[in-house]
Image (cartoon, rainbow, N blue to C red; front, side):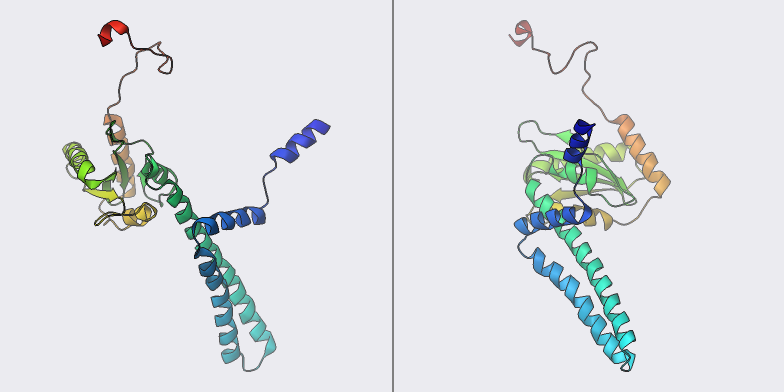
Length: 237
């Protein structure tokens, strides 16, 4: 019993307030302006609530107190929203530029109505450049990871493939990066959301299933563990 209590205390997750404090510390470490934006989001509604209360209360202290409480609650809500956005941006800044960063965003950072996969649909083994795919109300969006000079051809090839399979579904492209005409990693979600709606929600699922069913994968021989497989010397020669 004592061991069970010890193990449960060790694996016990931190409380909500402690988690928020840890998120704030991480965000402040990578975003020096985050704390000032959060403070502004907290204090601004409170000041607004006090001002409105004084103007509309007619000197009634109870009414002023209600407006102050409303401003405090609104300030906490705004501060939490700002913290969440800044924390997300700080987290993306840590993986920005690394192979697979776009896949991480597509896996956990997409808004409702969009379906993404952390696995790319095309990869250049030498340069680690990749093309990812997302399907939503705006149709099919192909997202490149790597310099545009190297990924433009990959994007065009994948765009032709999708257009050949689904000729009536719009296909657009996004290049992730920091150059001209590119979208920064933390802005990928909003960029997808800006695409013009062209298909319905049921069609989104149907299109995604259609593309997944036709996606080619390298066959693995049955009975062989790919982690233990070794090349045969004769074939190498």
